[in-house]
Image 1 (cartoon, rainbow, N blue to C red):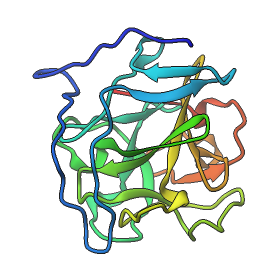
Image 2 (image 1 turned 180 degrees about the vertical axis):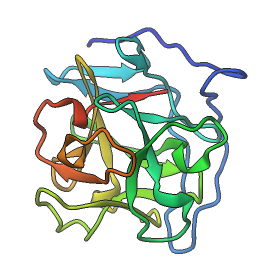
Image 3 (image 1 turned 135 degrees about the horizontal axis):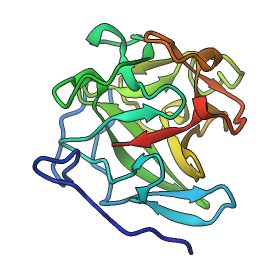
Image 4 (image 1 turned 120 degrees about the vertical axis):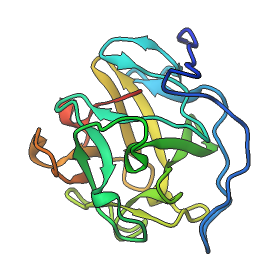
Amino acid sequence: MKSFTRAVVSAAGAFAVAAIAVAAPAQASAVSPSSPGLRGTDAAGNAVTVTEVAGTGERQAMAAPVGGNIVNVNSGRCLDVANAQVGNGVPIQQWDCLGSGQKNQIWWFANETHIGEYYWYNVVTTLDGQCLDVTGGSGATGNGVPVQQWNCLTGQTNQQWRLEIVGYGIRLIARHSGKCLDVVNASKANGARLQQWSCLGTANQAWDLY
């Protein structure tokens, strides 16, 4: 099994790992922090711990309550809840990374689920505790389906993501579709929306965790 050196930043750094209970939204699953050290695979399918400090950024454990930024390799912009708006159905976009106090850009990984060879996570915003969600539910498996935030729902496969380390970053792959989190049209602009798309090995589908 391939592994990486663990490096968790605290205090002035980006992350602190804490095992605390977090209240979930109404009609949502109980949201619990991930174990210290996210688990995923590399492109060859080997198990890895996603705590590498190397390459294009610092890939580290992201857990409650602090979390961190998810940054697109192609654009250098952050995964962002549009207009810092709370509630179901708000679209997810990329935007300039605005700092540690910007709750609509701070995410953590929760509810680790081990199924077969993969570990799956909910990707939760600190803005209002909602999950990164492929619009339309588990049947929405096609290319171009937009990504939004939605109440975290137990066992909802369109809200479960696995991490795959590739040479240029990390892919986030949706469980229900097997497709990658993707910036529309490989745009580098503020406000470009997020969707799912077949995994192509392109930089607009690659992310770093800070």
